[in-house]
Length: 275
Ligand code: CP
Image (cartoon, rainbow, N blue to C red; front, side, top):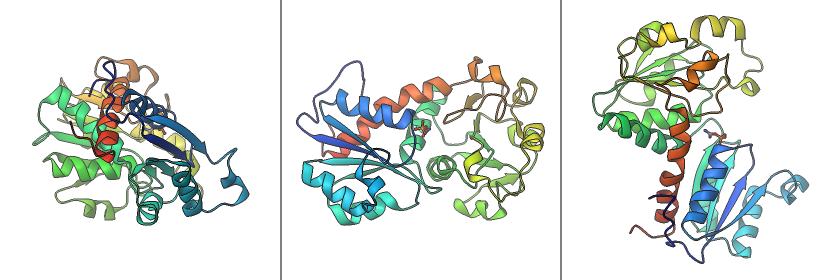
């Protein structure tokens, strides 16, 4: 898939973008992807729609299907919301991030980005650092990259990375010191500190920055050709030292760019087109 060469594989199809949560990258890239395939898109956000009046998720989905949507791309704060819609609506539902559960299209675009740099994923040393507990991006990447043979190390404080995380996939390693995770890594993946989900947890931002912020000196522990990833939005000065996002090792913008062709492929498949 190449966004600069539109393919009318979904001409005449209608794609609904049903977003109950904020988004920049996922929403815009699904929209560009759908339009690059010739589809018509409609954006429905909770603010300004009948969701504010109390309409249920299933009723909202059924309403959009009645209007003529062929595919729904759904982001929702509750884990399992896209699955619930898929069970009730009988049209393709694409998970654009559900609660603390999964963000599969992000993991696919991350895997694609890694492949563009590393040729193969099997055997790569991948370190995921930060708020793994709340992160749907981490969960989807752990499932996908483990399945593809990466050796994965998870790193964070106990409040954001419980021991239970090692049960997410076979062969995961858990460490508490950032240096142990980064040393010798091929891929270093940072996660956003989700301040909106930290209520009630004993996480002090100053301590987090001191122990887990990525700095040029810490990144030097990784392999010389290691790539630095972040699903975004990256909070400069928190997960990473400000300029690191723009360093030669950073592929953060590439991840965003790769979201479009990867989501074109997802939409084409959902629409029943594979060629
Ligand atoms: N990575 C990601 O899901 O970003 P958005 O929340 O901006 O879509």
